[in-house]
Length: 42
Image: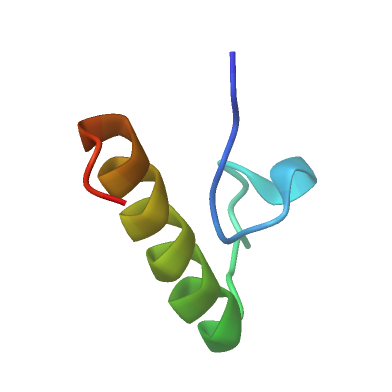
């Protein structure tokens, strides 16, 4: 299993879970790169 996202793992599914805005941009780039790699379009 892989847990991958912009938030901190220990905060997942907590009432006060939050994510820094700059981490969202980083995660978007990472996810796009992963999709391109999996599709062989990187």
